[in-house]
Length: 445
Image 1 (cartoon, rainbow, N blue to C red):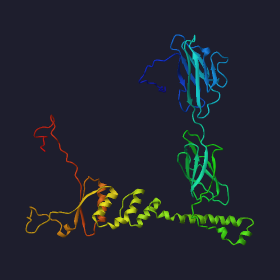
Image 2 (image 1 turned 60 degrees about the vertical axis):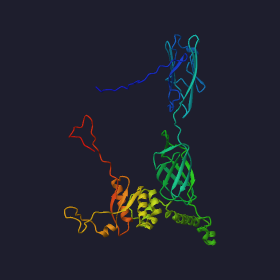
Image 3 (image 1 turned 120 degrees about the vertical axis):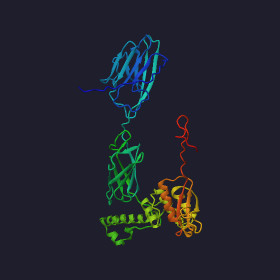
Image 4 (image 1 turned 180 degrees about the horizontal axis):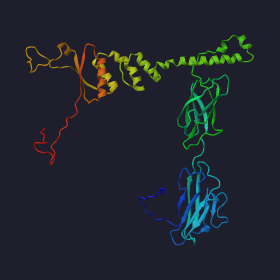
């Protein structure tokens, strides 16, 4: 026999409230201020009299958006438009439960207002209360326009924030000729717009129509006809104001006059489009070698051209910074200030000092064999050796990077010996009262 687990309700805290009056309006479904109510939902409420009188059903009325929906003493009680199969009214000694079943669903995102007018039996106490709720969003997003913002990029705008469900759900059709056909390769949501990348450059100034199918709003409403299309013009790259490179005007006049069918003009237009793209690429060449505007792929080439000697993994911003200061690093190569600046640039660590190396060596006629005899570097080595000191503990990666920087930037005839850093504080095992034992775990320090 299968085991069924029934849902349970647990109340951790119950707060008693004293009602300000009679009767009371309870158990409202949908509740006051509720959002996202399904459009086919019903309206249910309980009118309760906590006193001995009970609810006067004949004087009870319920209005929805100002329209009478229930009248207790009327015939019928449920008015047309609210008398669906779920409509019901049940009265007990102290409660009148009313369920309205709208025969027409709520409008999408509609603010529905419910007013309840009633009284206790005998009319000693009356109630006139209004509350509201908001229906769910089933309004599909609408395409409000499109614009080509780059030779291969089109931005499609909507009347609300949208999500991309299919990056290929954008169909492009050229409305003018000659024009190249294009197809989407990727789409990214940007709030109330979608940035669509196509497979080839759009023909400049030619009208294209985009039909959207791969987009929906935050409530999973998809774009529908006829609000799924937009018309835009193909992107034309900026060009210098004084430049005029028109192939058609360069042809002899008699060739242009003889072109009665327009075939020659259309053929020249195809050549003109390719020529315009080449000129635009040439105009953008200045951005390629500009450190601040160059694409990331060209940054690596710029650093390679500058002879970047540092094998570090850098992000795009650090690559731009390095390219801008690398020549100055070359100028400071072989100096202490150059080493300090380079370490500060890459690691953000300030060098405390670059000090001459002081090593214990064998002194002829003074050192004693087996006592203070120590094989050390020659005087020439010590004269050109140095240590680097920092005032913070370093990680393994930082140590290796500092050594790589110093080894490259130091003068060729010098020797980098030690990288001195503060040692972590020594752990002291203090004497603990009641735990340490004299002569066993007692340590004087």
